[in-house]
Image (cartoon, rainbow, N blue to C red; front, side, top):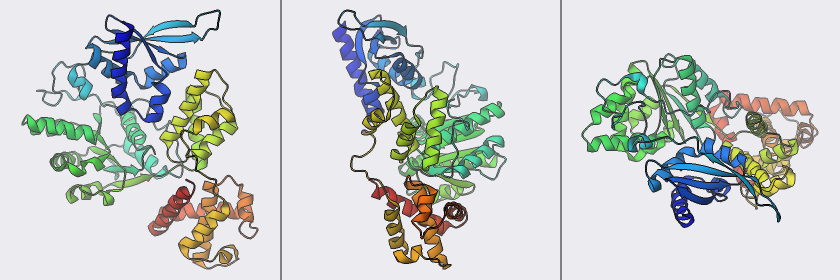
Length: 477
């Protein structure tokens, strides 16, 4: 039985490895050991109660689907949780806990469970489909309360709140949320859906990835059922489509989306879209669709600054009931500055290592764990480095940057430099001011606020600041 268990688990891992990010795979799946199989139930050993709870909360659906491929529809999972690792005299203490998240899936439900409590195979071609049977496909953990607001996402978050309060009856239709990987687009989009369901329980909400939309369209196209497909989406009151950039190579799917978009918009329904870039930069998408994407509001999400990253970590710790030394929180926030997903991933890996090794979290453990997240070649950026970069960018001499002058181009270059120094260095406001001819901290505060205000009102100024931010980030790698 043990050999069989190892083979089944090995086959499961081959699938999981292609789906889960590498760091999460090493953290949450490599430590698992297959124990046995009994009556289509795979028993796996996990190193702690914390491990068991995390797997059940975050990966139970993935485990269910992979196991059912290996053991059939009756497959189940049981955890053997290490309670005490034991010693030379005593064997390790364990307890067996059945997996709570498994349920029976039909093949169709595993692919796209849009409709609940209905035995028919195809959720799109149901005669007399009742709107309330549509599963919104939302993750309840994504809420506005759990989404930390900062300068990096304030416009997007507040627009999302407006949409959730008055879906379809606001000027942000469609609302397009765009930004890089891991900056919270999906979180914010699903927060809108969850808030609509809470405030307007009779509204029909649906969240769907563009990839899922395209695949379902292709299935219906093969079955000559495109009209049923389009009709289904026309039932939705709030349609949320994630990662619309993937429509670029799906011409026919774009035609269907165009028809659905027009019907919903003209009917006063709400559309929320996410993308990795603004609509004007989406290549391969029909111009008629892009023009409609631009009807509402396009709001970007940027990389969070140092203070916001600390707030994100502290909020997650509070929600999970965790405590950690302040110096460790600051260390994580300073060194993980790419996106929120990696920030939370670093925190989770740190907690996992603490649980595995039964060791208190301290700065030494944090440095050891973060080696997997931070490139070894990364270096600390200084105020002087930023000053030189800004001078080169605006073709301003270094001496003029420090002089007391009212020339607009010099003043703005100095203000941007102070803004970047505050965002990318650990120096105090007083220290930053001293690097600019002995100016005080109030000048630095005023400069940073001026830059933020100008970024909201001057698109050229905003592009300059964003480009300089990227240059500073690259210099730190």
